[in-house]
Length: 71
Image (tube, rainbow, N blue to C red; front, side):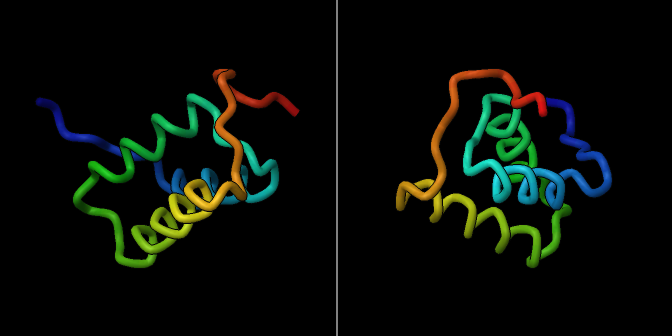
């Protein structure tokens, strides 16, 4: 299995986009999966992902069936 390499700032961009739109697209979900599997992310980034997941569970964020949101 090849290692996961995130782009610099990818987690911050993901959090900002989802916070702004209140929607989690397929691309966002794949980005979250890659971030969660990346063992080199910081504790702060992991905490941000945890908060995003909690918001999703509580219904504050909708899961969109589209690939991405074009604005």
